[in-house]
Image 1 (cartoon, rainbow, N blue to C red):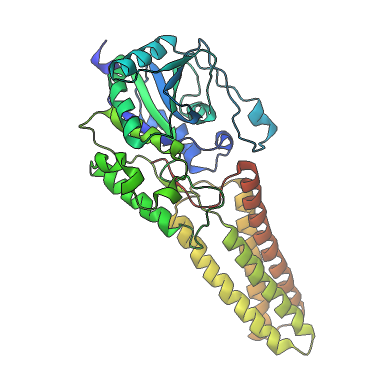
Image 2 (image 1 turned 135 degrees about the horizontal axis):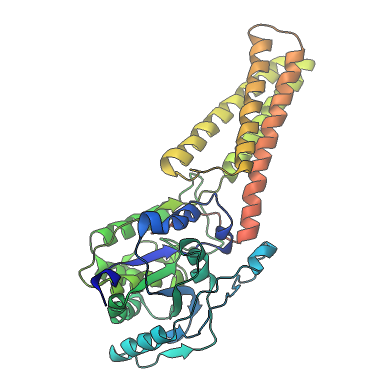
Length: 395
């Protein structure tokens, strides 16, 4: 086999939820779509995916001639189209036999070849975007979360020769953290425990402290919070082992998922204060109303600074905005301008009463903008069935 056909790299990716395939605003969507252009231009002969959604007692590999798609959504309801999507990539029976042989030779005596198993969403979701043609043979390998990181690292070491056969090895899990649904999150958007775990992982990987990563169960900070079930983390160890003992890790994509519910509620509260303040101008409580308007604008100013900071500095999430996002932000901006014009007119220029109604309309538009943002976040949570905790993506 020619040198150009060998694979030198292995990868660990976040597979995302099934909705990732249609949610273009998600940063992972554009990252995977640009995979061949910006990340890895080589075309592999075959792909071996270590799937976090295939859990077995002993290593298992699928062996079929044509892959089908498993809708392994674990009780979460998705749009109807996501129950019809297909990724009919060719299977890789010969690769499955080679996997079994390599693992047996490395001391893994029990390796099961599953001739009925097809692709979990940990495999087909990212591959649909990375290799949409579905013309590359794909094989899945299971994980054993009841064992440890060193076990999976040794799996990877055993599989390293596959790279010389042109096989691209991908560990598919869930980035730096995969907390349980009831884990609380921080109002700032990034939980301190998650940031600490992520910082440790980034430092350990990029500085070659792989032994520390292999002992993550005792070495990693906040391990039980970050990965109460390590099935989504151990594919990383397989990828590290398969890369070779002298490998060097590089971060090729990073993004945090940010819930905007806090901003939505704050917009709704501030616009409500402004609304009541303007209506008070028609009563004997007009001076008190001006205080409410002042507090409303103060709260909205703080929210705007926080919102811009989180989306541009700390969490550069929305590089592309969906049309609904644009509408919501335009509504908030337009409402704020109307409310400000109304407030300025009745307090500074002592304009006619019609400007009070301008302020009322503005505050209502602002409220609707916040309500739209809240609705969008709620729908995403209901569809994805995932915690709103920001999660580091694509490590």
